[in-house]
Amino acid sequence: KMKIKPLAAIVPFTAFSAAAFYQAFKTGYFASKIVSWQAAVSVIKDNLITGSGFCNYSVVSAAYAKTAEADVSQTENLFLQIIAETGIPGFVLFISVLTIFFIFIAKKLRNEQNRSTCFPVMLAVIFFIIYNMFESTVFISTNMLVFFILLSFPLDMPEIKVRTKRINTYIAILLIIPFLYILALPSLAVEDYKKGIMLFAAGKYVPARDRYIKALERDALNPAYSSKLSDTYFAMSQKEKHLINLDKAIEYKKFALSLNKNEGKYYYDLAWLYRQKGEKQLASDNIVKALEKDPFDKQFTESYGELIY
Image (cartoon, rainbow, N blue to C red; front, side):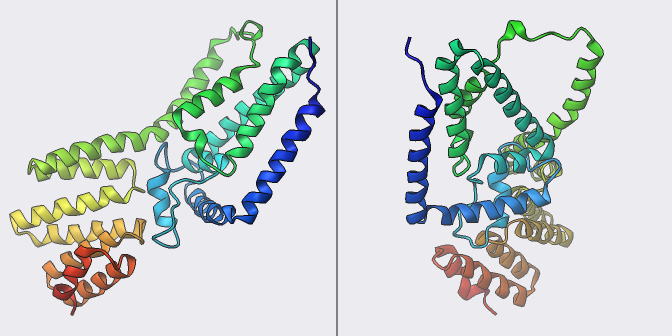
């Protein structure tokens, strides 16, 4: 049997990696990555314990972009995205999985018969991790499946001892359920948001409002929820002629804007809400800001003449 010498595999692997990094550095590849990493660090600082929630990073991160043109929907880094979405507990859990993999693979590699299969797997995992230090391809479902299959490769299930003390299992379940619930809140919020949209389209503003409020309670970091809640209060103010609903519409639109200050549409909506209330100067200020964010938006330019004071 042909034996694989570790040095023979590592040397070309390292050489090709170094060449790729050098070429990427020359072409300015890292410039956009640094912007994404800076936004990710800001999101992490504000959501250190529970994270922003699964699949919620792209929504939350928009508020941390320095310019409207910057695309920070992905962290472009495996570890930053995990800690940003799941907080410290999720990050620790992921690091534990990686640690277990390398412990088990190291034990397998001690046996010369296992090296021909285990060594390529170890290299594949290392390469996958290094590559995703600068990309977010691991979060594509098929890639993630392959990654975790590789991580499970060195595990020999018959050798794993099953603990007989059930109390340990119960404690683990009790500890993990609240954490999983917190991580699931953004997904539950999406369902409330979708139902709110259907109710709003049917003209059922009160139940739509209640759905948007519930979505906002579950995920207060998503500006779309507070923006839609604002639209609902405005529709209610038009139907019921209550000034308090118009004030609520302005309040929630301003909250959406505080979550994403680069969204010109929020300034535009706020301008019309202030116009509806008779506050012309505030309406004028906000349409100017909307045009600053997106000077080529046809809707903004057409409304400028009517809203400017």
